[in-house]
Image (cartoon, rainbow, N blue to C red; front, side, top):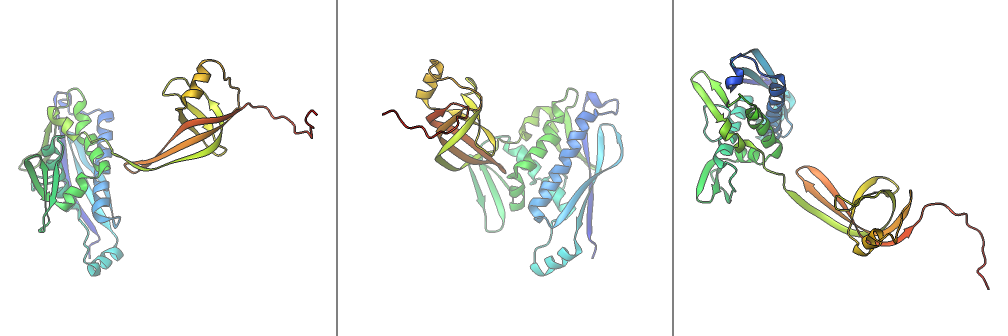
Length: 305
């Protein structure tokens, strides 16, 4: 059994800046890297790590376009397992089709992004026959579940942004397309490029806890939402001070600080997920005690009689 799947496609950038048949490396290199990310994310999503995909540049750069060979290399052992599991891999040509980077489809990820035009998706229906209907109010787009899975992948959407939108922001580059022998497909003009800007990643709140903590002052700030820097014995972090009484004392000059001072506080910790990134925020909601720096020796002092 052949353990390699290959296909090729030609990506075109055009415009007045490319009439000399040259393209700035600073424009081209990020787009090429993003193309690699685009196919890697598509492959990882659809093939679940069972295959690897590599992007190589073929031929010379000319007339504002370049050709890319896409190769998908699969493990023979995994292929054998898939025969019994009934779970075949998505081959290179199918990846190109599902991404919509070919004239053989009008229902790929590219076409879906262009159809949505940054509108709010109001409903998604997954039919029993595998057809997916995506609604923007009364308007709808029909595709398949694999396209929907890639459309929801934020990293893939960001890669599309860097392949399409970013180069078209350069002066003199006003056209992107996939070129095939019988014409250009998946075409975008510079005035349409904003359609491919990836949406903001949504933040998912995970947990929120209050605890008593002793923190060492590292840096004090009276701007940027009163975010002070603390050390808790293992790491440093910024925390917003929301204790109005304490802040009033500081502003009035009733409380002064020195290097290494300690604060015993009620510390609120909030954790959330932004995309695949775990995010932690800290807030000092109450300052219980302020202990000045400087170590005093302990002596067996008897209180005055």
